[in-house]
Image (cartoon, rainbow, N blue to C red; front, side, top):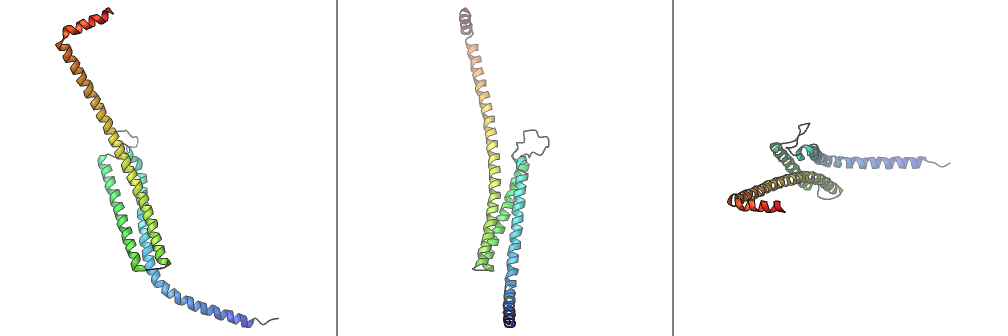
Length: 195
């Protein structure tokens, strides 16, 4: 049998040294962890705001896009004032999220200047920015679709009015001609009857 006590003592000694070394690292990491937890808590707040904005946009999509002149059984269709308030609220929330995200990006330089931690923070900001861009895309698509529908509705309304004006103008011209030439009109009627 071999004597394992020497190997056992060497392993224990190496373990103690590595524990002492790790304790020294943990003390340095804790200081930077306080800074990074502040960064990450701010990032979580921004993410929650972005998620709330996305839910707000998606939940009010049907009410926002439905035209007010249609009758609804739920009466949840927005009128023009409510749509304007919705657009202003969504715009304010987008601007607030954008400003918070910009402040978070600038704080990266104060936390750390290089290494994996900095690249991690930059990736967190890129992820948040991508989510915010998706929300802005949803908002702009909704707004564009609503304005497109409104302009089409107004265009159709103008076409109806234009057609009515043309028909009214045509009728008044015919009435004037009949009033000016009542004899010509009776002669043309007699000719059509003879045929």
